[in-house]
Length: 206
Image 1 (spheres, rainbow, N blue to C red):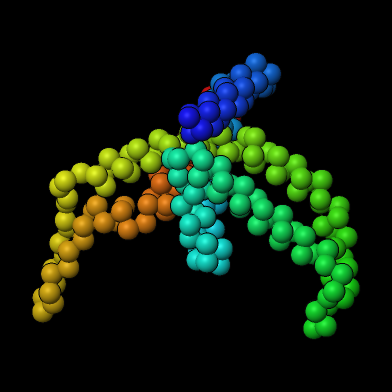
Image 2 (spheres, helix red, strand yellow; image 1 turned 90 degrees about the vertical axis):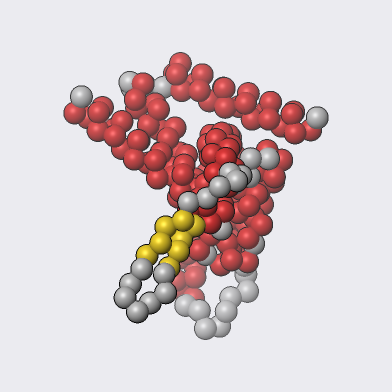
């Protein structure tokens, strides 16, 4: 019941975004669609960067949640990530400074963080209300595709042979199943950016 309510809320927020974009958004339909795809592509590619960072290596379950088709886990993962992001910003306002750090640069950075705080707060709201519903729909679709491939009973193996060496075999299914988070992110990130670029090209030269 809880999952159904959360899915309904996500769909309502997503529907409101589409309505507002279609009703009040300026430009042609391809510009509006390109904007939505750019947001999805940004999320997918960002997951790839996070996975390679210390956050991804330490909190691997966080990426599982942020790419999960389960709406409860997806929302929890995004809230946890934004919590880490805001905690990282708050470190800049720590009164106690490392003696080895540069005091002038530290003061300048603190002043810049203070000026950028409204933008940080604005991005947090934008992430939770705009990016998250669009990204969930994309990851729900990509999760279904990945599950179809990984759940298949059969597999396709590619072999490479060289003189004097043992044959090397590669399972196509293992490429996907070994890292589902990266596979889902690649599946939505790269195509979304490419299609958004093509739509922008159509708008510019069409």
